[in-house]
Image (tube, rainbow, N blue to C red):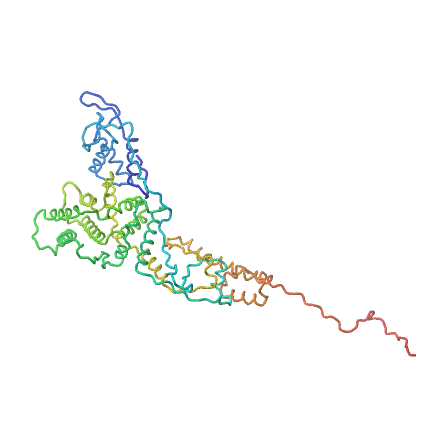
Length: 529
């Protein structure tokens, strides 16, 4: 039995349902059964279906070993309701499936769930605001400078000090960022980071971007206690005092310092039931209805634990502060109860960990519309949260630093060189990724040498420079970048080829030259008159 891993993306719950139905129909063993003195071919009992499907779900990486037999029965009830299976008399449509010897069979075809149709989306829907657009009525002197695409010409200007020239420049002050601008930066960069982790072309089909509140993100990042728990400005949204006292009691069991009432046998069970009743009657799950698809999509990354934790960190930042605080306190209590060996059993039928997952999974994650696998998906998510809640509910430092640097850059005074308006682009913020030591050494050695080598070649081939000026610039370049210079001119001979010596001219005889210098002097005839 192999269950294909369904990765992140839109309609993941629907894809999981169809995948499970197809696998159940293809692999479930069928055989002949007798019922009331009559034989039925190609069928199975309810207990056989529960046994087989339970083992399939437990072995699947999409659901995990935490799936209980009760959850498997609930799923088979939904199979019967949706006509994935029917009884041997052809009846279906009711959730009256029980774990017994009743016979069932597959219909000729089991309907798969269709994927919802939504308006087409555009790739890269998250756009970063252009804060450097000048407001109406301002002069061109206040146009902000965008980051430059480094080419040899720009490197020449940036490193002009090394070669003895300093081009004229002027200071540019960017527009003052408003509070709304900063909030939009936080929202756009946070969503961009989530989209990059999930590997999606768009978040439109897993998240309604219009419902994302940038104020929630900023509050969840900065308004936190020393323990990392969100501090609410509106105290009316706090947990009721009696619920908070009950949670502290179980989290610190048996040391309940805040407890004023006497304890009795079974007291801890009543306290737990009080907490479960409060969370079970919330109007909306803690992870909210509109973030259901986003969290379900992240579940497809659980095979890559580090990436899944990062994605859950971002999704939890999108929660309303009161929901994030309630989730933090609840997960801390659940984790402490599971690790507390002195805690008496809170339920006779389940282990403590299973009880925590089954009790609180529905109040943490569920869909507004009926989703047939929401119980299994919620249990899978809560299990992962319990194991990694300290990391998941922590503010992602890399994202916070990147956004703060971005805001500081937009507020910083810039230096603009002549021609800087050409070949420019406003690049989207990038995020750090870990590289190998070998890649780091290569980038350190060769990352900046290529533009410098191109700059050196321009100096060498510049026909407008005289030999004296060219030698001066090359000498300055050699002093500033000896490694690049040494690579271009490895030997003195290679450098000498650039400036070949001119042949020396032979001195001309200024006196008359005798035709026959070794002949004896002969007396010439006189021309006297």
